[in-house]
Image 1: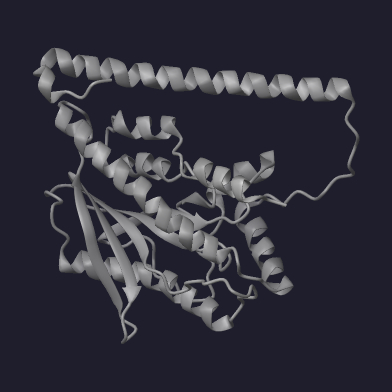
Image 2 (image 1 turned 135 degrees about the vertical axis):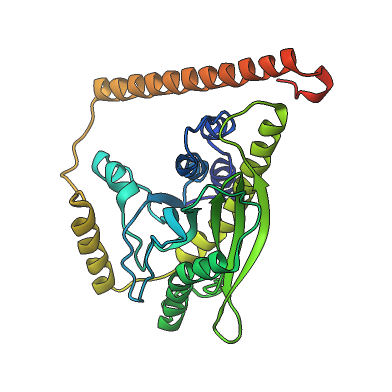
Length: 313
């Protein structure tokens, strides 16, 4: 049984970003605008409770709009993931899992199909397209809410939340929220627009990326609340069976079945401890290498710009 202290410790771990992922974004060098969303998606792959799906299939009980239009294309989705993958097979198939009724998207990573013009503004055509793309995801939450599958008493669950998307255009990443209004029309709100560059040539590029990283890492708290609410839903056996069949169909990888338990002797435990220590050492080396890379970059900035304008290591 978890104690209050256990939950506090879990919450602290769950809200600490994987620093290497954040540094990869801060030091991003992308040859094309089409590749920037790879680094943005990595910012969302730092936490438990949800997972990143790259160009995933959508298997909702509602009609889904095309994920590639003349205006934009969906690159990734941040989806509810109440049970994280723990085995080799489930970890390998995790990025290609489909979006389903029990694992819906809460954020979509979308990019423009045209990177010729400055991307400061979102046109009416683009906004309408984004609303069409987000509508099935909002409808899914309504479907689940109408099914009345909440079975835990005393738990306040919001099954009509705002959903989000990042929209990448030339020189900018726009953050938008979406929800239904009283007329059941999708209402879109541009929360912020962040400048971004393909390369870093000045300290301003670093500042811009820091703002984006902070915005995305702050947004994850809202995502965590949605995912936590989803975890209180009790699904029928038929629904879970269909979900499993869909996963196997899309990924081609079956879920592992429980195996007969075996007792470990003292030497087995020593071997497990040794593997854990090796993994920890490799992780520490990766962190040090990443720190050295960022430090070298900041040192270069200090050598080419006035010291008062360059952040300290």
